[in-house]
Image 1 (cartoon, rainbow, N blue to C red):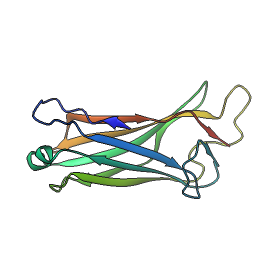
Image 2: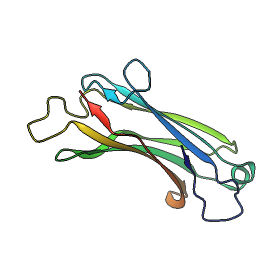
Image 3: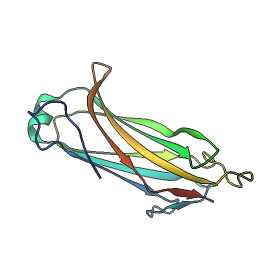
Image 4: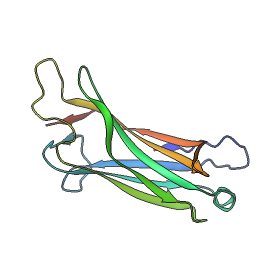
Length: 141
């Protein structure tokens, strides 16, 4: 869980952003089978005042960075969610099978740090409103 950071003091409390990494069975996990799809469920909540004053879209994206030598990249497609005046939002990122490699070569760990980034766009430009959830190290097996 992370606080959503707003650049303006008009929006207390700042809001909360959570994300959960689920294996192919839909169960939270830190060991993922490389050969199957997995998901990241994201939920966030903003104050009523922020909901009334904000427009635009939210974007949620996930990124993986290898521990040691290996791949660094976005995993799964960026999800766009329109602000609709509500205070609660959710989306799911589906990460296709074989996005991260299995049977890594010697010298590579097969372990990854995964972060999920929530950003706000207004008139197509990224604003200063954002949040980041960082998962514990994940093993791709």
